[in-house]
Amino acid sequence: MSDQTSDPRKILDGHELETELLADWRVLFSALHGRFETGDFATGLRLVEGIGAAAEELDHHPDVDLTYPRVTVRLTSHDVGGVTSRDVELARRISDLAGSLGAKADPGGVSVLELGLDTWDADEIKPFWVALLGYEATGDDVELVDPTGTRPTIWFQETEQHETPRQRWHLDIRIPPEEADGRIKAALDAGGTMVSDAVAPRFWVLADPQGNQACITTWIGRS
Image 1 (tube, rainbow, N blue to C red):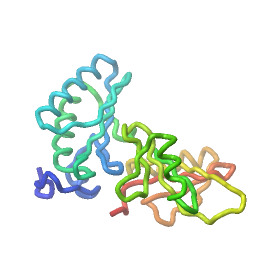
Image 2 (image 1 turned 90 degrees about the vertical axis):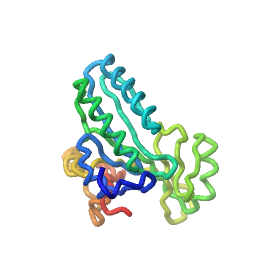
Image 3 (image 1 turned 135 degrees about the vertical axis):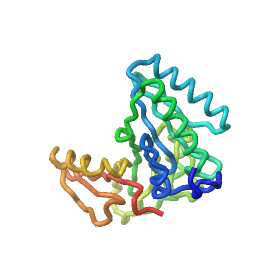
């Protein structure tokens, strides 16, 4: 463990996590994400059992999804709201477990979807979406999150007021930085256009052939 991860409550940013050389993992928002191709359900179940044992030993518990034929894991320190040395340690243990079972890491396959909603008064509409979806407002009151961690985060983007009510959702997809160029090329080859890359690699704004916009985002360039 490096000096920068010696404090178990210190939140590590993307640059610090890169120095940890966690080849199987990618940082997306406030969590480490890993996906392991198990090839069959039984191997996935054994991997989950091993993760459970390691989590109990370290007293640090991840979110785990078992599907055929893969296991997806999210690691974060909920008490501080980010990735710490505790997550790094458990990530290494999980990678070792996966390797011992012949499960192949697929770090390029992880992503996180967010939904952005244009509004001229977020405070006016947030209670509706909290009530409708059973979401919770975050501490800074900028985002609405699913308390189960299974549905996309919703955030509000300021826009001008319109006499005729208008709603425009757009998708934000957070991916590992090394996957961005390929994902952008695929979207452009599929008929999309580049609206703006002014703040890349923080995010790129793309549009489909009818002008509907979406953003590809990474952790780079964020505090």
